[in-house]
Length: 265
Image (cartoon, rainbow, N blue to C red; front, side, top):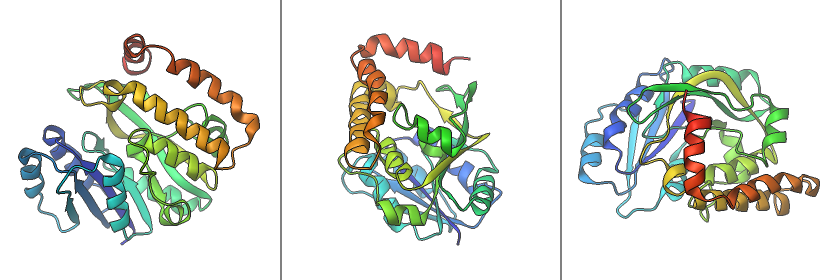
């Protein structure tokens, strides 16, 4: 088995079925699908019980652990050469795993691979294409300014996890950013320019809307750790100025701007 897919779910019964189907219907078939049910309500648990596929392994938390610790549980169970992330409110396109595996197999210097996404609204309506930086050089240059990957598009090598560890359990939010900064301190990253995921934004459940300031604070902490512990040169400290100033802008001002500038077509 070459690939492990890790997904955590908490009360997302309305989008769960589409997310799961998009994984099980991939053109690449040889994978295990680890789903961590983070003490969801009975409706979500019932949806999970309907899944009839031997590749699916469900872990059920008896009490809610949160996204970070739930993902770590999934990663600890993953036993394949490559590990992919998935979220319960997104949809992977059919050739996602094949294209990412093909790239990693032919680019042994890349430790973490993401992709572009099609942004969709709460109802699934297409909004626009979002393409993060693609090449290792540009990704590394951008890393302290913003997270240069879209979390549910990730595919990484097991050796990366063995080298840097799991998600930082101190991070309730921006755990992906902190993890990515650690990866980029020792490995190269890349993004495929082809959209491989339908990425849901601007929904009532979106972390970036519900807890925007908390997420920004953790992102600043991740940058500080990169400069003080992960070997990023102090000469890049100036890249924290804009995020720090942005943090001072009230959330009620920033949310409409995010919708207009980044999400709307």
